Length: 279
Ligand code: KIV
Image 1 (cartoon, rainbow, N blue to C red):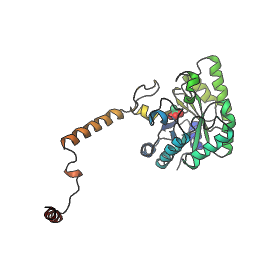
Image 2: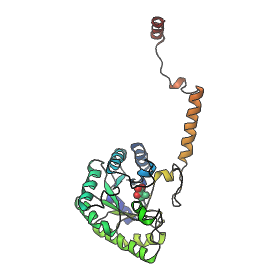
Image 3: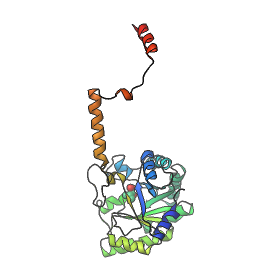
Image 4: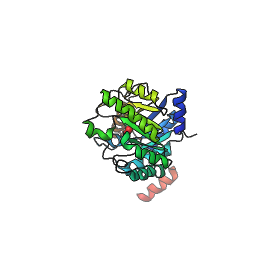
C-alpha cells in the first residue's frame, strides 16, 4: 500500500520515526522503496548533486517534473514529495497552485514541498484547497542562500528562534501536512516538534524530530567536495564505484574483458559457410 500524509502522521502519533531520503531517478527510488524508506523527496538539491549547479536557484519546473516522474515510477510504496523550485510559488498564489498541480499531474508526486513561513501561508492554503498535500520547509531554506549569505545554521538568536516557532504554527494552520526543519539547533527543533501536531522531518536539526531526511549522495559517500557536519556517511559507495570503473578500464585495455562468458556464439557450420564466402 502506498504511504500517504496520513501514514506519516500516524508515525508521529505512535512515535515511530519517519525515514525520508532524496532520490532523483527511477533506479535509486526503486532500491530505496525496496529497503522500506517511508518517503522519498525529489529535492531541488538535484540542481547541485545531479546537475552540477552551485546552488538550487537555477532549477526549473521542467527539471523537477522530469526527475519526479522517474522517481514516481520507482516508488511503489514510499510517499513521493516533489520540491517546488525557486520562483515557482513565490510570485503568486496562482503560480503556486498551477505549478504544484504540474508536479502532481505530470510528475505523479504525492505531495509538494515549498520553503518559507508566514510569507508563503497563502500559497500553502491555496495548494491544499486544490487537494494537494504540502510539506513546508523552515530554517536553513536553501532558496534563500543569498539572503542568508551562505548555507548557515538558522534560529540561533532569540528573535530568530521565536520567529521559527511562530512560522511553524502558521504553516500548520495554513494546512501543511508535515514540515522539514533544516539547519537549526536541536533543542529548538525539539520544541517545535512538541508544539506541532504535524510531523517534523529534520536535516541538521538533531534527533528530537519525528523523522530524518538526508541527501542520498551525502549518506552514501557520493558527494564530491564538502559534506555537511550533520550528514553521516552510512556507506562509501563512491570508493566502490571508483574501484569498479578503474577495473573496467584496466580489463578492457588488457583484453581481459569481455571474457568467454560475456560473448555470444554462432553455429560453427554457419560460420564456416560465411568464412568461405568472405574469402
Ligand atoms: O532539496 C533538498 O534535497 C531538500 C532537503 C535538503 C531537505 O530540500
